[in-house]
Image (cartoon, rainbow, N blue to C red):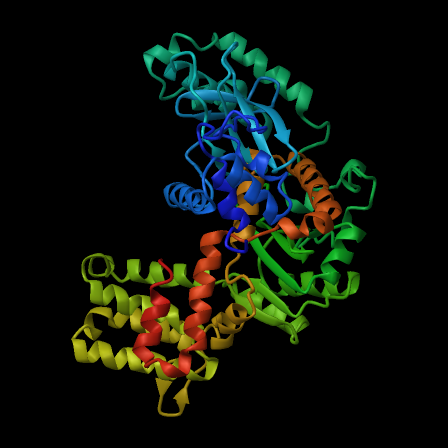
Length: 546
């Protein structure tokens, strides 16, 4: 029975019709909601029963499951949709020229159901809880799409967003929103005076009655944002700096305790969603019972090493970190500050960001065409990223082997600018006195230990959180008080994740594709000493793309 993993069984039920005899006591299963029924299965014996009910042997069911798995992957995910706000400032989804309003959350599988906004149309789709992916495609509509109406809703959503996030006058907002509309859309949008009144009403109803600060130094945090919705203290630290170094740390005592208990921490910053008076929001995530949770939200007016150092020294005062590892991006000031405060924590940079650094250098140095058209050059370039999985002490030797091979193949001159960049940044330029220190030491970007210990090699879950948070705000650089309100809401989500982490820990599985790649990487690493250098690097290179 170990042959049937939950991820495969899930697709056994995604069959359009029942094949069993009239004696079957099971209801007909909905092809668009296989997960709901799967939750009820507890033991391998349940699989046997399903096989008997279906009127076929377990082998037939297994073949059906594999067929569906190969056809759809581990989950059906679509990201080409748009989130807008309605007149009541509720979220709606635009997908394939149709509009969907939020219907309800499915408690059994953390999905959200959305129904077509047209009356008497029962079409629905399902997204993940963070509304970053469509998991189940919509059922058929009983009406035609209306592209002009969709465009009208987009315009109205943009107007509402600008009304709440900017101080522009109504005329400017309307002009910005309708500048490129077609005559067909123009014919159905409301009159200018009506839109103007809606802007004024929206601002009056939803804008906070606080003066909007023009700089971070002018910000005075109102009492309602000093605490969470659970009435816990939220502002853990505020330096009230007047010299361009304002720093605000938002965290509850409970979040600090969870961070202290986390064996592995992750941190990253983002710029788009932060109010214009700040440079970035820096977020620290912890892992609590196999659940990734955003725990600390930090508003930074700049990103100097001194300000990062202040962050980590204050966190050291607020709680005791017991983490053994940390993962972050290639932000030099952030790396240096963290290592100054926590030298004993094993700090590693995200492999995805390493591959992005390599790809951007390929683009800058004009060798994209060679990468796309020459299989051998493409393979050699990917070997530079594969160096991250060599033992730290062997990385330089393997780098020099790649250089020698490129010289023998006559490709070195073509890639010389890229090689110099990689050497200066990640290896260390060779001189008469030996190799100098690279910008990022080898141990910082080496992924060997994390792979062996089954730890994430990327900050993809943080990137996913940033996307979800940005989607929730629905704009770039919002009003500071609107932003603080959203952070309070995000803290509530974190509290809920902490509450459910213990119960849900057994269900927090990694992406199947990620697990397969991790297994391939581990197998290659375990055979490191049996493989010639180029063969080892080639096998690693096969597992990733830029």
